[in-house]
Image 1 (cartoon, rainbow, N blue to C red):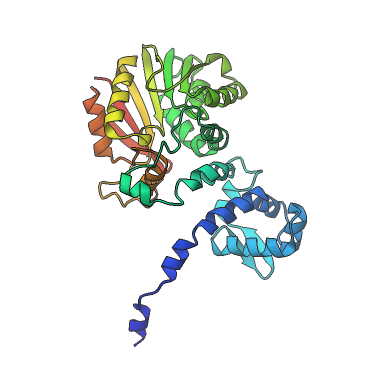
Image 2: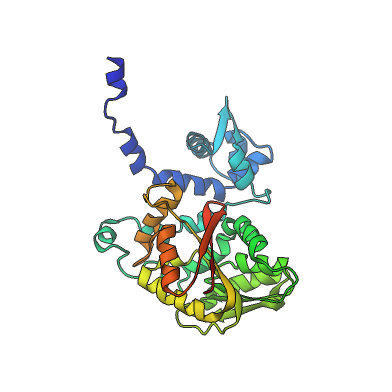
Amino acid sequence: MSSLKQNAPSPLVIFAALNAFQRATSLRAGIELEVFTHIAAGANTAAELAHCAQASEKGMRILCDYLTISGFLTKQDHSYALTPDSAFFLDKKSPAYFGSVALFLTHPTQIANYLDLVPAVRKGGSVGHGNMDPENPLWVEFAKNMAPMSAAGAAELARLVAIHQMPMKVLDISAGPGAYGIEIAKLNPAAEIYAQDWKNVLEVSAEHARDAGVGNRYHTLPGSAFDVDYGSGYDLVLLPNFLHHFDAPTIVQLLKKVHAALKPGGRVATVEFVPNDDRVTPPQEAAFSLMMLGSTEGGDAYTFKELDAMFRQAGFGVSTTQPLGPQTLLLTSFE
């Protein structure tokens, strides 16, 4: 009888999924109220945290209990503490602070893309342009708030591709916060970075370059990646988190333009969420396809086989892969 009870159907997983938005919004509230920073500084009861955050004790108790249930805090008696992940990524005093990403990922424009997915499922992409309108101010929010997500991966990519002390011309397509190109410029003082993105976004990445001390070697190419003149003679082209916004024919069109901008022997470094061929593993990489369904007209999370085929169709040679944090780095050779 007990085994039958254990295997009985339960609506709880469905109920949890339909309330999952609360997990995202409560985490954002904790970040905005600096709950994790206050706990790291020694405030650990609802009353102490309420005082620090200028909030009600009841509201703080309910929020912190929910963050505990969600795995972001622990609780002993009436005292809250940080988990190792929260201490590392959500305390503002931590050099790995990650909290600003919440401002982009839970931006009202982002959330609105998924409030009614039925039309997107029927169409196979967002109704309208999704997030892909020219000069969309959402991408300024991306450039301002998503830099922590690319920081570790950008440093590792630079270590792999920067040619130390040798002159190096680098094109950073859809530069966003500029992290990938900036890290290469920091590692190689002879590297010149040409960053392409919308004008309003490049104002942010250029500021980041100046802050990093490489502004004199950071050049901007404002406009659409499909229309702007890249120039030529690049040793390296960076494609960080860009190809997933488009369908395969559009990607091949872009890659042909990239191929023409490279010098013989040059390489392309692509950063993507790459699922396995089954498209359901690994979970985070595979789930990224839903983000593209809701926010782009033709985008997807592409497998390595699909990406490799697109590069070859555009005239490139061999592509290799290696992990880059939660993402995958593809290095593709000129042919």
